[in-house]
Length: 316
View 1 (tube, rainbow, N blue to C red):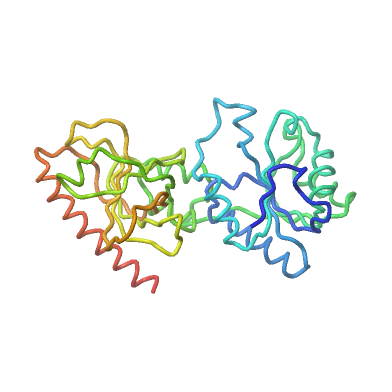
View 2: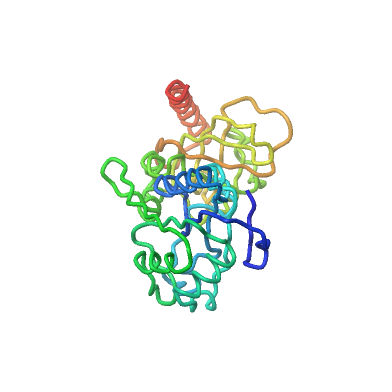
């Protein structure tokens, strides 16, 4: 994927394109439907499939006290968008200047002159321009004027629930990672560098990889069945089990994300990992001794191994 971080970075010969617009936090199942449609239109009409998104999130500029904590890092967002067949992304730096653009100026300067849009695909509740004055009806009228077609996408449901980034945030923070996975279309994941821990696990329980998450949302405190990927080598992935918590058996402390790999691990410790959360196992609790904690971890490992085997049979 080619990512442009400003309008100035877009080359003069870019496009013509089919563009979708949004924040795409989480890149959930609804977003994926839109992205696949963008890629399909691109193939059918010989257009460049493109996404227009914002960094930072507009609420960070307009109403920081109400800005949502984001499900995905920017790198996760771009990887997931790219996986659906979208070639280009404009990461428009959102500012007060951008916020003050009228709907017409936004369409003319960004969609038409910079991205050379021929098709624009948005959700039915899409709003744009200064004070969100523009809606999909106005976008269609401007499309007729400037020479592009507008398509709208309806809401996506999973088991009767409307898929949204807000709903997924609530599920993740409550520990309902399996339900979040259904809405996302893939597991919720944390990513970041592997950092040095306190050394307690290697000496008294089991050795772990200690993740310093870059995501703004964390799952509820507890133990989870996970899969862990080496971000510097995307072909390397391990079955794993992860504890999100404060290590109360060892008198607690700051929140940590500690992952125990169930598969054999050779070579150097990875510098960056992504931990994908598949299923909640149990709440974190304090044990009277490290030996009792280790015994519980072995039970958790046996449970996680059965879950992984079942999931592999289903996916295989």
